[in-house]
Image 1 (cartoon, rainbow over the protein chains, first blue to last red):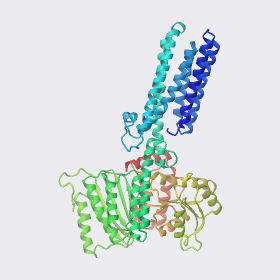
Image 2 (spheres, rainbow over the protein chains, first blue to last red; image 1 turned 90 degrees about the horizontal axis):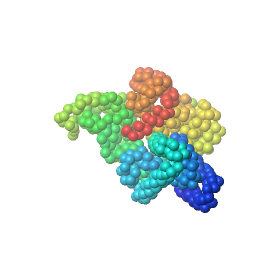
Image 3 (tube, chains in turn cyan, blue; image 1 turned 60 degrees about the vertical axis):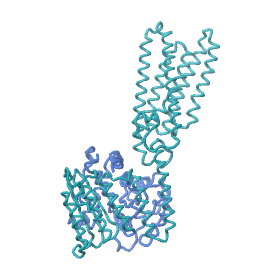
Image 4 (cartoon, rainbow over the protein chains, first blue to last red; image 1 turned 30 degrees about the vertical axis):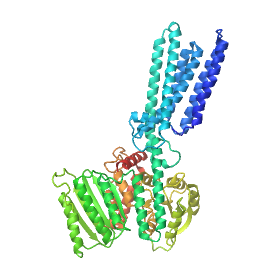
Length: 421
Length: 218
């Protein structure tokens, strides 16, 4: 929305206003004797101006990615306005004033309304969206454009009300005698206007939602189109700074390959977490806690790489917590005895949870390493059995799998963290 | 395939010159690199001219990325094989290249050996699934996702296909998966091909919807 070229946006109504005022003044001077011809010309001019302007705006909006619904609504508004103008044609200078007010009003109202919708789509409540006090990542200088929007909206509404007043006044004064239908016409006109406005609002809202769905991820390319995307660009800039910091660190520690690997891995993780919309500082889900555990293990063992694939999600309840702890031990074992990469696959489906930790090393023999066996028995199998799950170890020539399984059931209230060591 | 004398011919497409050079240095001895390209335009003309066994390409590039290259080349050379090599783990990116016609998808952190093996497989017409891609597909076809549930034209995965995908997601190579399931590696490949076909048939809209939701839910 903000991509609409601001100069054009402001200049067109201004040109229309100035020329119409001049024309109106001229017409009142010339037409005071009751000559209808200049007045007709003036009314015609105002009407064409209105239609041309709305047409231009429609084309502009299409070019900037507005949906057909929005454009159609605008055109509908224009036709409605034109039709209404014809009703008011009893007095053509009023038509000019009406057309002008209507045009300026619509121009002023459209953009703030769409911006408000964008903010609502981004998660703000209507009031927050209108006042600009949206929760979320503020952008320093956001207050002024919002003030301008509110001003523009109020002015626009005022213009539209004035247009309505002019039309009503005209009808009150002239049409009761002429049409006999004045009140009805006005009522229809107002209802039509309200309906068109509502249609425009919903069309705009649905368009904005679709727009966000399609564009929010690719938002780094090209102009930001919505407030959401602008926010994202701010965060992206921040992240790029952090990436650049890491690169500087890497350059300075280029003689220490382990450190380089670790730095690169850490940066990759944080970038991926951000791209996937994950908040990696708080783990309230089973997948989140698993990722955090894998990070810890990677950090403990420089050079270790643990790749995680997750299907489904679940909250971090007691049994999930035990599973993550057991998995952490399994990952430690894999990293220590077999090296990287360690593959972890977590599948959650209808309360059934399966977690696989696989290394492709030659297979660590539990029988040979007494200490490892004890670790496995207590820290992996014991933990899982404590929460009613199972742990299984399959070791073969192509690698070792640690398989943790549990069915999700109501956790027993005592011993909230079974097997914690 | 490795024992066959002629090396596989490869065109490398990536807009990051540094990365291209790196990959090239790693695999140059084991495959024959017959062209490189850094943009969609360049890639289309180089690939059509060089007609390599495999095009190894990045998903993210200006002007439409890997998907644009695949679509434009396939329009003129329908049997061209593509292997997507990418840092992106956004499901919509992954699914988009696979749907466009890539026979494989691997992550840029892949080891040189595994990359060469993936090139060999794709050249032989075998699909290459990374564990992550297997995970995406499992989720896309799971009860949480709309595919199949909404679109009755798309077949669901068979039990066997799910088993194969689960093993791949766990890090099993095809041969290891075959051993585990007591079937032949050929059969494993045909299951994976069939999954790939179902994925390509599924509705773009549903996949996009699923991908967006997944990004939010995880």
